Structures are given as C-alpha cells and as structure tokens.
Amino acid sequence: MAGKRKKLEIPVYLFLGFLEGGKTTFIQETLEEDYFNDGQRTLIFACEEGLEEYDEELLKDTNCTLVEVEDEEDLDGDFLTSKVLQYYPDRVIIEYNGMWNVQDLYKKLEKTPLSIYQVIVNVNAETFDLYMNNMRSIAVEMFKVAELVIINRITKDSPRATWRRSIKAVNRQAQVVFDAADPDEMGEEADVLPYDISGDEIVLEDEDYGIWFIDAMERPELYEGKTIKMRARVFKSIRMPKGTFVPGRHAMTCCADDIQFIGYLCHINHTKSSTIKSLKNKMWIDLTAQIKIEYDEQYKETGPVLYASRIEAADPPAEELVYF
Image 1 (cartoon, helix red, strand yellow):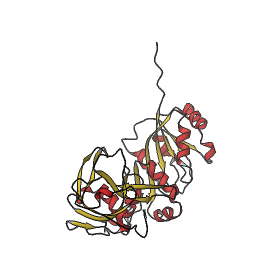
Image 2 (spheres, rainbow, N blue to C red):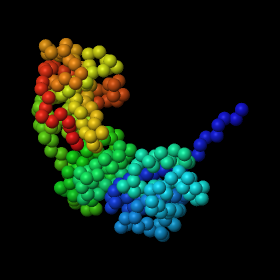
Image 3 (cartoon, one colour):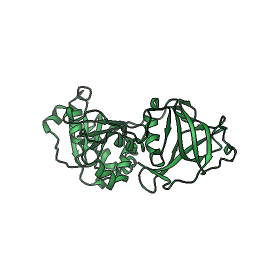
Image 4 (cartoon, rainbow, N blue to C red):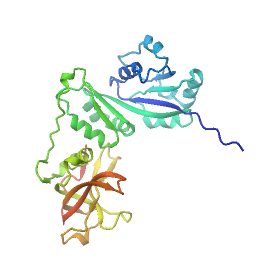
C-alpha cells in the first residue's frame, strides 16, 4: 500500500512592520546577498506601497517576480495558491501591510502550499515610540511571531535597552538587532538600570520588577550569586516540585486582555521565615532570595532560579500591574 504523498511546502519569508519601517529596502538588500541570490525563483507579494519602490532591474537579475496586493481580502488562500501555480517559485517573500491582521494571514496559509520559514520585523527608530503608544496591540502581535526584529535609523540617543526589553517582554526568543545609517551614530548601548547591581545585594522597587525580570533573562550572568529583596505575589501549583513556588507579578504586555504572570522559580526548603508554612496563592510577600543561574526542569533550559532565605507577608503595592 502506497503511503500518503507529502504536502509540497514552499518556504515563506514574512516581513512585518509599519509603513516606512524599512521592509522594502531590507528585502532588496537581502536579494543582492550571495547567500540569497542563488538563482532560485522568488515570488514577492508586496502588500504595502511606501516611498521605496522595487528596482525592476534588480528583480530581473535575481530571478524575482513581483505581485502587488492592494486589499487585505484579496490575499486569501485561493489567490496565494493560484500565484504559486502560475509562477512555480522555489520560495516566497511576503511584505505584509503593517495595518493588516497577522493571525489572519497565518490562517490563510494553512490551506496553501506555503509554510512560514522566517519572520522578520522591520522597525523605524524614529517612530517606534509613536506606534507603541498608539498602536501597541498591533505592534505586539508582530513581535510575538518574530524571529528577528531589526530597528533601523538608530541614533546615540535611542533608548535601545528600553526597546529591547519591550520586545523581549512579549517574545523572549526574538533576536533584536539595531542598525544606523551612520555608524558613528551607533555608539555604545546605554543601559542604565533603575537599581544598583554593583554590590552583592539588589533592592528592587515595585515599579522596577519588569525591568529586572527581562534583564535577568537576557543577562543572567550579571545576577549570579547576588541576593535580591523584592515584593512579589505568590503563585503555587500542584504540578510544581515540592518546596517551590513562583514569586512574581502580573504584567500587561499589550492591553487589558493580554495580562500574564511573570516570575522565576523559587526554592523555599532553607527559608528561616516563620510565615513559610502559611504561603497561599495570590498573597503578597516580601522576599529575600539568592539568585542562581542553573538548569531547571520547569524551564527546560538554564535560567535564573531563586533560593529564598526569608519570606514575610506584605501589603499589595500601590500599582499591582507591571507595564513594559
């Protein structure tokens, strides 16, 4: 009996970002690279008309076909499949409209021969804060699916560390790269933390929890062996190892409908606190713990693990939510 025929899958390079984010420029630069300009047939779906236009000579030289899409409803599964059958590409590039719903595209691709291979988000540093303040939910949806986020037009005054944490808050796996037209404008990435990490003890204010959480994930080596004091909320689950809990905070990464609990695993076996036996879910505590960087089965990877030395009951902070 013959087995099922494997579905043909054509790799899709998906480029996301708002208007004037640099998508077209980056795509054309990629087409010129030796590793990409290898003679394969490339089909490009351009869903947004910006100031930068595709170079017809470049498209010809790199064996590319350009299909322009003006309306979101036109970019459905039947349309995509028909173009694949018409041009029979080896790979596809989709330059997606920044105002269109990303998840809708993923659904449309399900019944096509196309399969997402890589997702890149291009961001203009000059408008990063504008879009994050006014269209945060749309921006966050892009960051959630991105493998690579490129923030271009960087200057020495760009708050790179802040932007990196904003992206990492919604997608820990995303690689964030900064680029400047003028190399002299790059300078060093200033990262002034609101708390002192120069000593053996870190005292964390309530409003700085989110910054610490992301930075400890990004640069765990800075926190190895240090003691931290902070106010946190208790999360316990029967699925967690005995003698552990997660002290953390609820964070709003996008909007009121996108609130999640963030925190690191904490061992309590050697805690000297008299309140340890009365730890209950959702209660607020003042925690003193040592930070160790080690592999943990709960993470399935190496990361910060806390070892509590003291836990006391505490009042809720003035603002219970953490924002990024």
